[in-house]
Length: 100
Image (cartoon, rainbow, N blue to C red; front, side, top):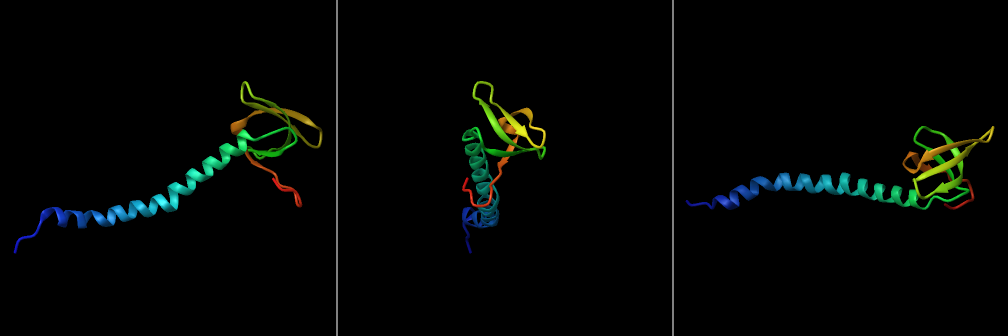
């Protein structure tokens, strides 16, 4: 009885290939989509947008500086102005009845 070694070794790698495919579609692909959406949100920031920083600070964008990639946000209640980088912004705040 003669068996081909290449077919036998291919069958041995099939479970590993299947596991890699599952990880790709369940983990890596959604992560890439999330990165793309975040990059698009950061590039579309404009004056008047209400944002949340990575430190949890909620403020309104009052100035966008495109040359050095920074934003100036106004934080309530004392209208304190903070200068932050675009990368520090994690999300936009959505208000009820207002589409973002």
